[in-house]
Amino acid sequence: MKTVKVQNFGKNINFSPAQICRPSTETQLLEVLNQHSHGKVRVFGALHSWSDLIKTEDLALDMSQFNRVEVIENEGVKFVKVGAGCQIKTLLKRLNEFGLTIPSIGLITEQTVAGATATGTHGSGKHSLSHYIVSLKIACFIEGGDKASIYEIKDGVDLRAARCSLGALGVITEITLPCISQYYIEEKAGFFQSIDQVLTHTSKAPLQQFYLLPHSWRFLAQHRVVSPSSHCSKLAIIYRIYWFVFIDLGMHLVMKLFATLFKSKRLIRFFYRSLVPSLVFPGLRVTDRSDKVLVMRHELFRHLEIEIFVKESRVKEAADFAQCILRLADDANYELPVEIEKLLCKKNLFESLPSIKGGYCHHYPICFRRILPDDTLISMASNDCEDYYAISLITYSEPRDSFYTVATFLADAMFELFDARIHWGKWFPLKAEQTCKSYTGMPQFREVCAKFDPNGIFRNEFVEKNLGFEEY
Image 1 (tube, rainbow, N blue to C red):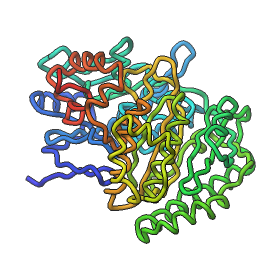
Image 2: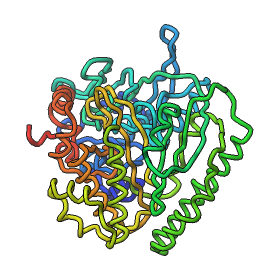
Image 3: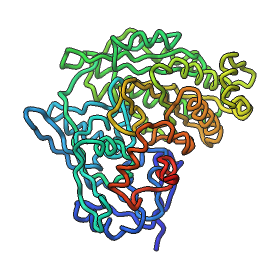
């Protein structure tokens, strides 16, 4: 039998399942699951993920045939029933035909709907997409049944678990989300010297996202607010073309050349200190459709990403800390502020610093996005009262050993210092004991898993370890 190999978008995950199935109906799916009722089953979507969530040596399910989109109305409110394997970009396009969209849109739209929600994918200034799920259908062995069945989850703790489930309850076949009217966003970009200056705009521009630019260490903010207009501004098309040519293509090509081909710290520093300011037009206001403004084309160039989540009350400290560690990684002679050295010593992290000194030159803007608290058990923004900020670090350089070293240090240190969480679908270096401490809803989540998947058919090694099943 020919070995089937699966590789993710970032090429950091490779595995060879014993079998790959692509069911097109619920009946076919149940037949396949019943044949593997004593094995292990995992699902993969668009493979636009960097964690070990999808790996399996047994059965891998490709749900891309489950891509139906149906708009329905209930008591005057519109909803969309969408197949688990439908890509978000397809869903957005179809909904726009009805003058509708979804409540939260992330930077990337390549993911499938089930893959995005199962890992807590989010945008900026709203809840994660998982939070908005009204109901979902799942194929599982509920309560230890001998045969797999389709079960609809509509409310209660089951729904809070299923909204962001890491695939640990079963195979999602369909998700129901609320629809909102298509809307337009007014955007204005600007440079700032400190994160405090950026955060003062949050109330006036609640959808803003911002970037810490390496080597100049200034902030570039995209102030975004819902526009009262229902039309694009005159400059919208030109701005779209400009952004695609100079940012989505141009900047990324330059970074690939400087970081991967030339491996030049000097060129990377020159780019951010001297060229980036000329690529942005501060003060220019542009109004465009939501799914045009909120999305970038990160998928055009292969990369690897880690995303670190901290509560809003800690984001200033976390931003300063990340900046200092990245400066130390770039320049071994950089002197850390005394207060940061004290923090590291207090948490027994100071002795790890030599491993990162001068070994890595960060070459991509560090993105900050605000996420409102999610009504979930284990999404990264699951919380009762406080917003989270996601801090995203991307690398285009290969080999990636130096990035792994720095990213691991940042993840460990920010967990210890700021109670940070890591995106389930991004590169994931935290240890299992750290992860279990991060989520107060983890015990409840395990109980729901035991109800829908008592034999652990839908868990792989990553899920077993990081959700604490090995201890229970």
